[in-house]
Image (cartoon, rainbow, N blue to C red; front, side, top):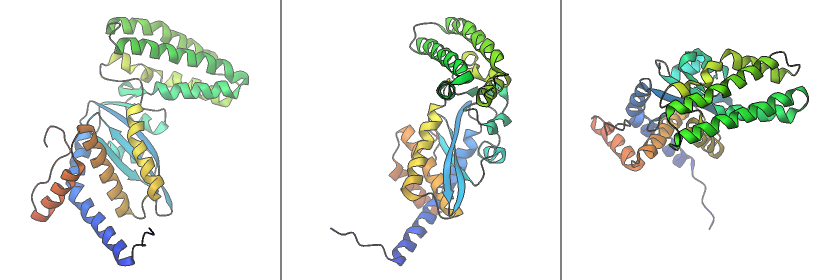
Length: 283
C-alpha cells in the first residue's frame, strides 16, 4: 500500500496540535525544572541538536524519578546555568569544562568516561601508552571495590579503606605525567590533578554513584528524536521537544501513563484548571 503524502493543511494542523500540546504541558515542565533545582543528586549530560539550520544542544538533568531537558543554541556555562540555575546539590558529570562552574566539592566525575580516556591514550601509543595502561588498571580496581560494596560484600567503611591506596596510586601516576610530551596525556594528567577531588565524592557521600550512566541513557532518547526528525525547525519546536522529552522520560521512570498525562494536561488547559504534575509525590 502506498501511503498518501500529507497535504499542506494537514501539516499545518499537526503543527498547531504540537503548539497546543506544548502550551498545555508547560506548567508541568516549569514545575519539574524548578523541582530539580532542589534535588540532592543530579546527573547531567548534553548531546547535539539542530534548530532549523543552526547547531544547538540538548541538555539533560536527571534524578531517578525526574528527567528534565532543555535545548539551547549554545554549549556554555550560561546554557548550563539556565538548566540548573539554582542547583546546589551534588552533580555527576563528565569532565566537560562547563561543569566547572559547580562547586568542586559537590561534583562527581564519571569514572566510565575516564576509562575511555585512558584507553584512548593506550591506543595512541608512544609516551602516552604507559599512562593509558596504568590508568585503566586503576579504574578497574575502583570499579571492583565499588561492585563489592554495592553487592553488600563489604561495608562502607571497608570500601573507603580499600580505595585509599588506589587513590594514592592514581596521584603518583598523574604526578609522573604532568610533563608528558604527548599533549593529550599531559592535559588529562593536569586536569585530574586539578579536579581530582571530584573523582572521589562517591566514596564520601552516600547516594553518589561513580558514573554518569543515568544522564547518558536519558539524553540518548534525544539522540533518537534528533535522528528521526533532524531536530526541530523553530524555537517553538524546540520547546515542544524539550517538554515532551521531559514528560515522556519522567513518566516512564515513575511507571505512569503518558497518554493519561497528556489528556489531563490538555483538558486542564481548556477548562483553565490545574493540570497533572510530573512530581512523583504529587500526582
